[in-house]
Length: 250
Image (cartoon, rainbow, N blue to C red):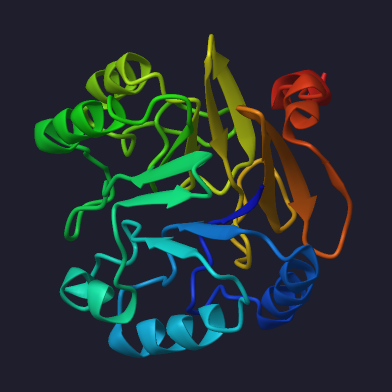
């Protein structure tokens, strides 16, 4: 099974149409089983930006499109209209092999994220019934800090509780966006993967538009990063080859 994760499209002044059109062509060739868009479809949460985002996202051919809101989408009362443009469920089961659960972390006019007690409790209770399946959680905000992205004041406020809920639920993979920095952390059996920005010019530490491709087979997930218009490689390679900014300057 193949899943594509896009994030941080940012329809607005920083949106790159040519990059997004190239991305659409690449995904059409991949023919994924599902596309997960982990938030920040718009830059300002404005009505005309949602209309444009819906138009662009409709270009993506896929039977399962899972769309989450980001903090930028909830600005300027965007939280009142987001679900009208992108109605979605919170749990998806794909071919009796994979269960994908979405957690809403965006809050109106706040940059920091929060999962909350009720969603964590629901996650634990729901995933307890999903034995022998690959369990994937998708959210917008980053669950653990990432190199080269500055302050972590806008992390998930209850990240510790959410991490514990993921471990207790035996989640295999968490997908995040928000920081525009591709990365992956391994916490024992739990993997946390971050996507870069798919089509904006706001980069942090990684200066190309990119998205993630997941191949899920026999309970295992292989995560690749795909540069839009460029090469594809294991996301873990990016981590293994990482050199801190200060080290490269010395």
